[in-house]
Length: 353
Image (cartoon, rainbow, N blue to C red):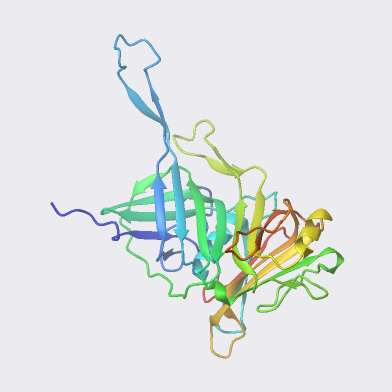
C-alpha cells in the first residue's frame, strides 16, 4: 500500500474577498484568495452527536446515533509569519481594513483595526486538501489572533477560526501563493511611552515611533520575547430552521492583551505599575523595499494606544542569568483611537474587500 503523505497538502483562503452574505461562500480564484505556504493547520469537526443511550430501547447498549449539529474549527499557525498572512488573518479577526497605495506603485499599506461594535466581523471561505480529500468550508470567522516571537527569531502567528459547519467536497484547482520573506524580529523596533507624553500619530509613519510627543523608552535592545493576543469570543447561532449549521457567528465582549519579557534595566517599569500609568506601546518591523522608487517596505506596525501593567514587573534571575522582568499589559480604550492598530505593508492591493 502506498500511504498518503502529510506534506502533500493544499490550503487556500479567500483572504482578499469576504463573503457578501454569511455562509454564502466565496469562489476561490486568483482575485479572491491565495494558497498558503509554510504553515501548520489543524482542522476538526466538533459536531454535536445525539444517541438513545438515555432512553428506553430494550437494548442495553442503545441502538442509534445521529449528528444533531455540525461544526468546523481551524487552528492555523505560521512559525515564520509573512506579511500576506498577517494582513489577511489580521483583517479577518479584527474586522476592519483600509488600504492605501504607494503612489502608482504595486505597494500598499493596510490599516487594520477592530471593527465598530455595531458591525459584524467578516467571514471567508477556506479550502483544505489532505490525503487526497479536499473540502470547502464556508462561513469561517476569526476567533483569535496571536503574534509572538523571541529575540533572534521570526514573528510567529497563530489564528483560531470557526466555520459555520458547512463542508462540501471540492475540486478547486490550486492557487499560486504570494512570494514574501519572513518577518524577522531583528528588524523590529519597540517603544513605550507613558502619561501625558502619549500622543498617537494617525496614520502612522513606517520606521518611526508614532506614540510620543517627547522621547519614548526605546526597548529594542532589552527585548527578549513578546506575545500579543486579540480575542473575539465568538458564539455560534444555530437558531431554528437553518439546518445543521450555524446561521451566524457573533461575538460577545472582545479583548486584547500584551506580554513582554525583557532585560531589567531600572525601576522605571515598576514605577509605571505602582502609579498605574496609562502606557502606549509600539512595534515597528521594517523589511525590504516593496517597489523600486517607492517609500513602503515589507513589514508591520502594531500600536497599542492605551494599556496598563496588571502585574508588578519585579526583576528575576538566577546566579548564572541576566536579570530580566516580565511585563503584562491589559489593553484599554483611550476614547479617541482604536484600541489596537495594526499596519501591514506588502504588494497585495486589498483584504476582506
